[in-house]
Amino acid sequence: MAGLFTRVAPALVIAALIASATLAGAADGPRPGMWKVTTRVNREGTTSEPNSQTNCVTAAQMKDPGQSLMPPDTADEKCTRTHYEWTGAKLNWRMQCSGKMAMSGGGDIVFDTPEHYRGKITTTGSINGHDFTSTIMLEGERVGECPNP
Image 1 (cartoon, rainbow, N blue to C red):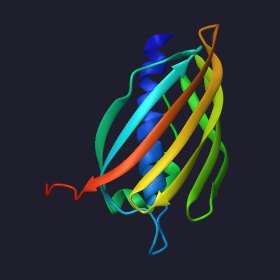
Image 2: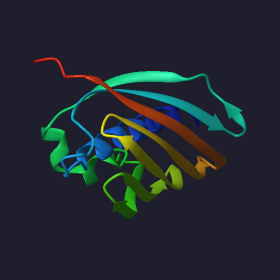
Image 3: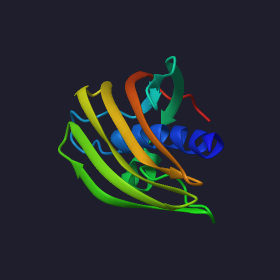
């Protein structure tokens, strides 16, 4: 059970970062570049220590934010987005997944500046017959430009 969740949780966090950054159509929207995302996972009442990852969000990744929101489909799991809303500074989405890891969930992200956001991703479901509830609290901060390839 932990293996599947461990594989999907980072994908959701990275997808949230990329998706939120890609939605920047307005001049004041989130900026591409190097983003540091700090997460805390609460699973069944236990909260993890903060974990940080740094990811480059490029202009190319900004072209299709919907693709970034979903964990990758596998032979055993398939996810569908059931709701998606972007207001310019707030992102809200919901999804439903089926297969070995049947779950539903979604997230809310609020940008207070083009270089900072806070958000939450909540999921509930069942992995191989074991029920789970998980909340990922995240904070993103743009920390600079992406390195040249």
